[in-house]
Length: 89
Image (cartoon, rainbow, N blue to C red):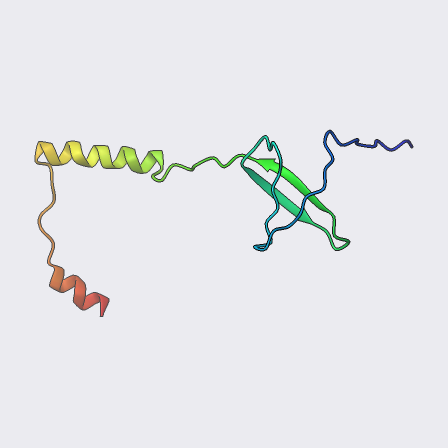
């Protein structure tokens, strides 16, 4: 069975600076996943960081429903914090 060989698009010598950093020249991405192997070779895989929403859609929907109920005056009675603290302790 023939094996596929990959030829590099770029090849250059990179030096590690005093802070153990190396520069990727003309990198297409700003974040790379690095795979480092025991024999010393490294593979850089370009990645994109996608920010996750801080609040889930269901939670936002519940907050909106709660605000609507609050504006309508549809609220519960005040709770007794002292009783809750006794249960907590």
